[in-house]
Image 1 (cartoon, rainbow, N blue to C red):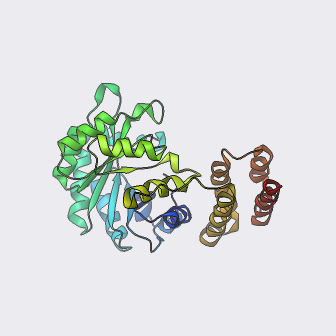
Image 2 (cartoon, rainbow, N blue to C red; image 1 turned 45 degrees about the vertical axis):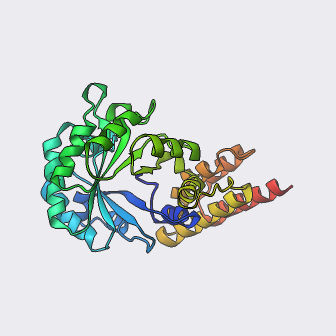
Image 3 (cartoon, rainbow, N blue to C red; image 1 turned 180 degrees about the vertical axis):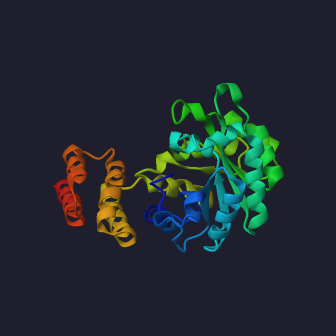
Length: 305
């Protein structure tokens, strides 16, 4: 998720319970132009498995960018063909490629021939309800060299409205010979169990429902690894992780950027806790790390009473 699954967040999730993670979407063109902010996205952690996620529409540019990505030794390289954001789609990137499977296949082939690491592709069910083409599209990507397919069960026209269609995801899993990861509406352990057991997937991906809730990922990972159901976090645990996340963000991005970036994360973390209206407003106004920490620590003291 762009602007969300940065290094600080990935480490917080991993330390709740280890497992694979994806970087934010990285522009292939920006890498070739040596954009400093984009290159910082390749400053990745030691925790593994890790996928670096690239997007672009030009096979040659994607292949050249893939060579740069390979230098950080990710476990695999993921090509995003599912992002619905207008500024991405208007350039023929992201989910726009669902309407151009031949170009998408050329991209996959160019990248797969250039790097020695496995290549995966993330797609949607289709462009709109009248053009559901995920099974055929996925088969074309596999023929071009993709070794794993992730499917978000919504069309581009849906963005994130409505519900993910897991029958389309199942159809992809029944069509291709490589592992298929299902994505969409995984909001609880119970949902994860149902989707993994009943739709033919090799795994599931959790996106928006991990916002402010890294414990959801941990609960699901630990259940499938050990058969153990861990409890929901206490408010003390939630506040402690918020402070840890803030500290990591400061370490990696500096105080000014960290304070701005953490506003949205902290709002997500605070969801469901009591009397957070004034706390959220204060965090939005805070301009320094000290102010933000003081607001959180004061809230901690309030909850103890």
